Length: 222
Image 1: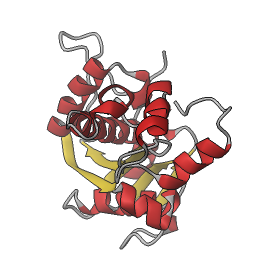
Image 2: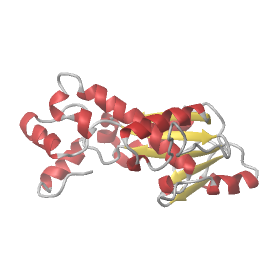
Image 3: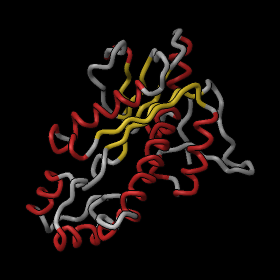
């Protein structure tokens, strides 16, 4: 398996950029809960050893087991110059739409690093209205979380944060029947059946559910 590496970061370091951040978001297709973005500036050239005693692997978060994500999350926080998490709530998604809400989450994650970033590496698209980081200081990389280690790291810290949040939400009485501890808010059969039986909560994305109801023969979002 080919893992993401520092190829993009090295080219930018050679051009004089110091603080190069990878950014990515998770939860974009979920029926409920926030969309969460991560932003990571790794120490240049520092790589974990996937064959070592801790078996740390940095890759697209969807390719890792929960246990491996948790271990990688700890390694990333320890071996980063800076990192940040940003979120946009279900209410913001309902009001603004997922695109604008995701951009809010990205900008919050970038700001929460608490450091001046020189260049952004992003999975697939550009982020507008980032102070000091216009498009010329951003690179959108198709399948970036499988190619850039900084983007992969951002996807991991965002995924671990969001999964833990959904676990906590799913453990509360009024939300437990939706199974968020297991499905993390995605449109699994149990979640869809619960929506039919109990209706929507303040944590649900109304347009997402409405689209599913309109096309109820479609498969669940994974």
